[in-house]
Amino acid sequence: MLKVLTHSWPLLLGVMLLMVGNGIQGTLLGIRGNLEGFTTYQLSYVMAAYFAGFLFGSWAAPGMLRRVGHVRVFAAMGSLISAVLVIYPVFPDWLIWTGLRVLVGFCFSCIYITAESWLNNTASNDTRGQALSAYMIVQMLGIIASQVILNLPDASGFALFIIPSVLVSLAFMPLLLAPTPAPAFDTTRRLPFRDLFQISPLGCAGMLLTGGVFSAMFGMAAVWGAQEGLTVREISIFVGALYVGGLVLQYPVGWASDRMDRRMLIMGLSALAAVTMLLATALVLPFWALIGVALLLGGITNPVYALLIAYTNDFLPRDQMAAASAGLIFLNGFGAIFGPTATGWMMETVGPRGFFLFIGVLYVALAAYALYRMSRRAAPQVTGAFRTVTPTASPLAVGAVLDEAARD
Image 1 (cartoon, rainbow, N blue to C red):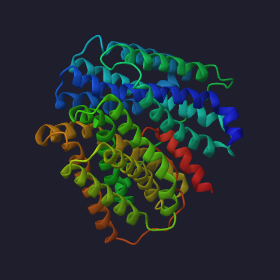
Image 2 (cartoon, rainbow, N blue to C red):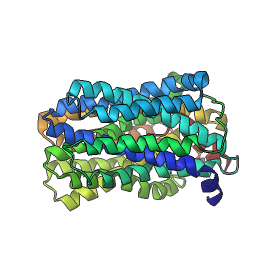
Image 3 (cartoon, rainbow, N blue to C red):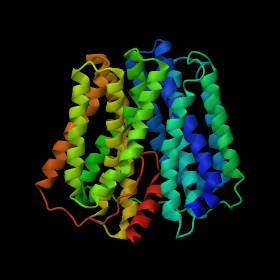
Image 4 (cartoon, rainbow, N blue to C red):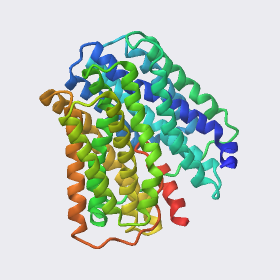
């Protein structure tokens, strides 16, 4: 790991700064939108727009990298993000914010793919798996750190919009000054979705559902907190707990998944999340209990995402894993577009606790479908290819991590 950090620290530092900047604006818009008088449904469109832009960016980035190269993509996307982040408070209109969020999601998607391909190129065959695993951890640490910074200035002013703009600008210094040549870009091919569904119906359905869960969690958590009357400090702690739970529970779940039927684990974790969400919907919980809910929810959602990819790979030869992962990630991103809007509708219908109710319904569906699939065919031989992956990672990074896992 020391060798990885020695060679890759500029890229990892840049990615951490990017995640801090992105994490601040993601939570801040939910808080500031509430202060500006936006309705829950209007904010749900603002939050969903990011995931629409992110999905489109994942499709467009490979062509951009091949045409103009990594350095120009970095510079162009970074400039756009820095500009957009300071435009938000100037034009407090939810329609304008929706358009800006599409642009920000597109830009961050392109930047992540660029950084991941660069990181993949700088690592050797012996260190690539460690480097990309470190990259996944750095992403989570950056988001957690962003929630601390969120408490420093007043959310009603301009400072919290300027800080992420500066951090995103600074992120490109270590990336672009790293003493490594810009790599050639190799795109990840996809399996046809019909073939992918025949290989793993649970993997496909599960990724659609977890896309909705993930975007509802991280797109609407701040909106829920503001409507519940939580302070900025409490909202930032709640959002940070979602990521801390995901960081801590990845490894215990991964250890268990390589020793049992992954479908049983997916069903059990989904059922636990569903029960927790329904309890949070029905009961008035003190703040310390809500933190426990966030830790458990984040600790289940991130590992279940990785479990679904690993389970699908159990049916595949190594040379098809990256292509299958690309298709699954696309399905997850497609599902993510509808998570915030559906959550917003639920919150408008039943009140703020519709946030937990919507996530609970999705987990009930996932647990039920996993149970159904267990009755349809025997468990595959476990490949041992579970690795820590996050929904923000591109198919390139996920494919490379799983390729390393398959070699072990």
